[in-house]
Image (cartoon, rainbow, N blue to C red):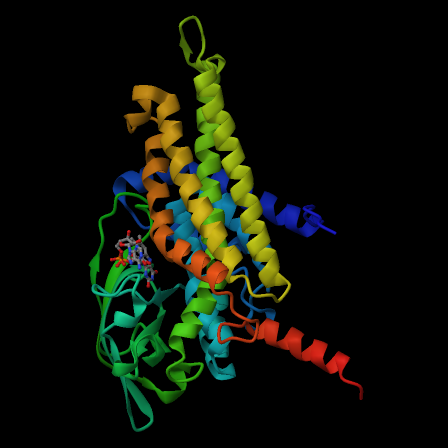
Length: 406
Ligand SMILES: Cc1cc2nc3c(=O)[nH]c(=O)nc-3n(C[C@H](O)[C@H](O)[C@H](O)COP(=O)(O)OP(=O)(O)OC[C@H]3O[C@@H](n4cnc5c(N)ncnc54)[C@H](O)[C@@H]3O)c2cc1C
């Protein structure tokens, strides 16, 4: 049976997130955008009311909510301001590799840090010369006794200036391409870690995007996440978890633009009637609504698959690609509905158009999503391949056990 009804808990959570976005984020969002200031107060309040770290397991102090619940929060944050929303949600990107591959000790220490205080963590994959092509990274990790020594630079790191720790990807076998990458937890206060630059951006200006350098940074051997040289797999599994959330953020941006445009089209009069009465405008509003509905369904599908313990790689890329492109198209059309006023900063929609652009770029560009989709369709992997999730393995093992006579 397919049932799109949310549980009462999910409805309450969505209402909590919406009220927070309406009262705490919306009134200040355009100011934060203009000044590109860091929304520390909002981070603290969101943490206080339980809107951060939604998926951190209960044993480490988190609420242990499912991915669908996380996506409900993300849509509302995107509706409030996706720049502030990105700042609030980025802990999930850094924490997921720790949840998937960290030792019990690492989980207690680093996940606990995020749930005990309103602290932040960042995911450090991208480098100046290695974006879509992760295998080209130059950051190195070398084992010396009971330590790893990490050197290199990571760019465009969300929350990088404010993070207490980083999930860092580095080459441990430089000749093995993406099969020679490992992942590590690096504390911000380790010697040799520096925040070199905060980027000045087109959109999502309230979010922090930084260049981080690691100069001969020593960390304990136990800070390795998962197996040595399996970091690429961990990064891809992480993106399966987080792409639905980014897509949900995109749905929120699109919904905000759609609401502003619909209202404006009923108020603005040209040729003696509200512009909504002109079919060309009404059809733009109709197309916006359809794209938002379709994007949300893809988000929910990709999240529910993972909540059920099934691999969602294809669904997550469908959701991310479609919702990102929908957010861009809807916000561009919202500016069109506003006419010349849409281009003026005093009106709300130009910010949304600038904010939407990043949806097509971070966590895999729209082209990279299409690469994943094409690969999954043209060369489908059997379920027991290397990107299988832990949950999927558990379900398979359980099914095998049940099918095997005792
Ligand atoms: C605001 C912001 C926040 C970010 N946050 C983080 C973060 O927290 N952590 C992190 O690690 N990274 C982060 N990123 C980095 C982001 O994920 C990368 O920018 C993105 O993956 C693209 O890499 P690139 O910028 O090097 O572009 P490139 O890889 O150089 O791509 C340039 C263009 O070529 C296209 N292209 C590349 N290869 C192919 C191909 N094989 N086929 C078709 N087209 C291709 C791309 O789609 C794109 O249009 C962030 C970026 C920004 C701008």
